[in-house]
Image 1 (cartoon, rainbow, N blue to C red):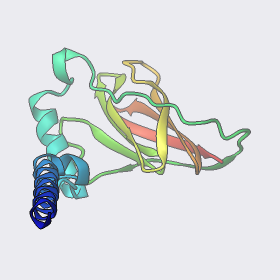
Image 2: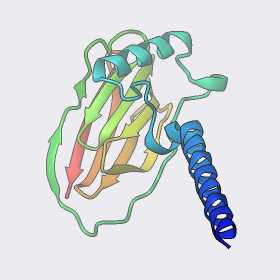
Image 3: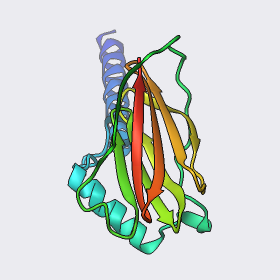
Length: 174
């Protein structure tokens, strides 16, 4: 009888070791997909600007010749809102190079270009805690706009061409 107990215990131990090793191997293979990339996937502001400048230099109108755009994602409506601030978006350093101008707001950023008197948004991205409610990238003679919405309120960014250069203004509602 002791040999049967020993064989059962040895079989159980072998199965437990095999299951553990299989699980560890699977986590190792798909680990980056679960825990994130270990190659430094987070970029600094300067690295983002460098990559945007490089991408704008090679393809200023996005893949396929059309405007490069972000996919809009709606967030829940926060109810009635009242204007709390209005300002001119800040431009990132080095953004005046031929690939467009980066316009930043608390709700997100957009890259605008002027083609004569016509303004067009190349791309836009919401800030953390915001989503894109709607976007009208142009091209348009008056303005192009993107609306961000999040838990902190709504931010509307409007881009225009002034003297052939992109300018912007934004309004934030609670």
